[in-house]
Length: 555
Image 1 (tube, rainbow, N blue to C red):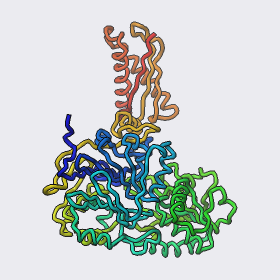
Image 2: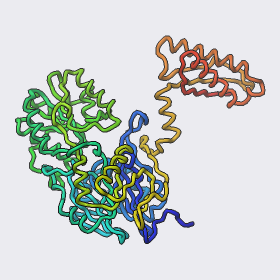
Image 3: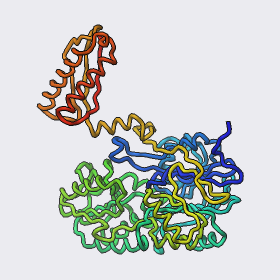
Image 4: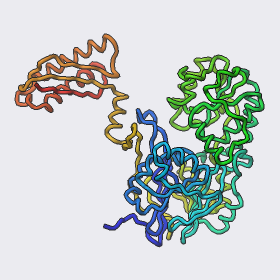
């Protein structure tokens, strides 16, 4: 049977399966001449709608069904929302991986953790390098971001060049890594660009994103005014910020400590590739207690309030080696990712309760974004001059605004992709030609399950509504051999729970007494009568509809 979505030899297709209509979980496909090329394969993180779930990723079913036509995965840079799903999903795809040296080092450590380092081949593409991958020619253009070796990817076919920006900004003083290769972008624009697939994160932000050099100057001043122990929360992958904080500590006579395993892993990958090799030796969390409080500056994971992160455990007094006390300070050198507001507020409250001073980017210039604001977007469009604009890496509101902005920048065609929209870039005008399956997978323990699975939905309902559990022991005729046993989870406490359980048991007995004799021999009928009785009683008396489960034991 022929594949209706197999790209023809005379067409170029674009298909996002993650990262369009959301921030994170990037997965983008390009189709040409019967083959598919993937750019990035990332994760996002669970929230209140996915209880018990820490990691969420795109559902790659569309491309796993066509894995034999997938010629490779090109990774733009080493952030989790661009490479984090590779260890979980590569076994379904089993294709070559392509990355620059630093990104390969970070990814290799992830593959080692899941035992795939010998199975999943990583081909190194040097900075500004190029390579033929199936029917695609791929060229990397150096950009600036908050991590070493971020790249735009130029994808060339006979239909022309597509620029896939990945994450970027225009920072004249990035402090770590090379600045954006403006000359390469201009040469690309001069040669003609079919389409640009571009970061939309900060499309609502006027001006520019700011420079890492400005953050360094501000942190120098802020830390210089603090007298006791200082903790700085930032993303482990923001190595430019790690270097800045280390330099600030050195300038003020403080020893810099790394708190959190991901920081140490990222440091190892950086130094393996020649980055951060000239910094003073970092202090481990085990040795912090040997230094006076005023001589330590700590870099901590957990700026988003992640439950098991270093900063959260410190704020709760649960970290075995590290503490913050009244008079100490916590600097949040990162942005608030949408959806994390509640967890960050809890973290701030826990720190405040300990008497810790909190400093955020609302108070001082302690963070700049790694994504382009409107002036930078306009400059990119001016240099590249694409025929088609395809905004990605943003929520729907970002993408819609970016479409309007691209048109203001004189781009002839602009479309608003969503996950699952199959777009023909060539030949002819760009258009959405189909919608394919797209969704999310959740890492539930060691299993990958659809986010909208019955198990996850049920867990969500349990977290909001509570549970009534009942057990019935009946004989063959359906007669109760003992009073029903009822327990309430997440509903009531103490004596009230005990009393209510007894009243629900009575309601169940009454319902079974009214059940027709012809139905008493059927476990399903008995259980359903008991379930409805328990649920209706609780709803009538407490105006809540808890999940209700009944176990029937027939002897």
